[in-house]
Image (cartoon, rainbow, N blue to C red; front, side):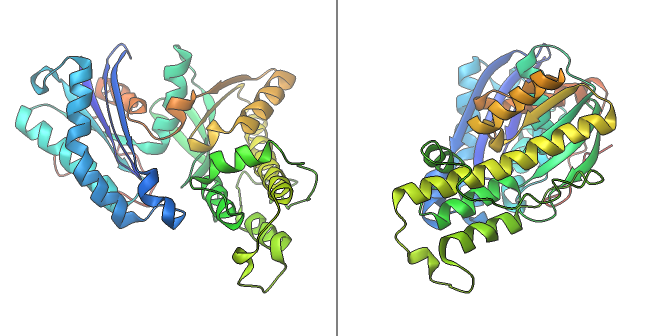
Length: 342
């Protein structure tokens, strides 16, 4: 079986071809970083317009790399939740068109659950049941994953996502977008103990939620103090930027690691799967690995290419296809709802 997977939930236009044996025949990702860099974050209208321009060339390239034609496909999978409405609609329209023209099934993909399934692909073997930690630009969530089709949300951010906080703090520090890689590079030369930033809910063992808004505000105050709207114009010395970046990064990592292992204790599970763009952060990977070894926990982190948004992780649709979960062609998008059609 050959499956075409399409991903357009935010600002990456991606397509991949995978088989029912989870073999990746092709993967293509068109980044929009350059389009959004001047704004310091993703602009939804720009993102959706870029998807319109890129979706067909990306699909064509993926099929060419796989050595397949549309007639060789057995199904099409597409991310339809959660994400930016305009972006999701572009991918869904392309998927529906192919399915209608070729008379093949349409399979829906939950973008967040697909991030966890990327760990299954990387492991090359079953990883379920597990705790799934998703840390990305738009989401920071903890799931109990009983199986590839059975996810239960246990905790999530109540305000900013971890990746969003990285972008905003990078902007405060005068660092380039996207903020994750920029802060990681700056932090390598800084002292994470130079500033003691807040870690929301860290001592609350009854909550599996996250909050990064207060941390972001604390960084702002550390830069210029309260009530100074022109703080962004300050010319910070390089060593201070490095210390601020390192201290901020350490605070985010502390929150993610602590809540992930608290979730493991509460669920009694012994496998932790981590996905999403923030999972590419080197310091986070180091801390997770250290803690997993200390606690004898099986740790599965998606490789860098599968941490950021991509279509390969849409291979979770193979599981849905085998379970008979095929969608009608009036399938809609659910931008702000973490929802997987039954």
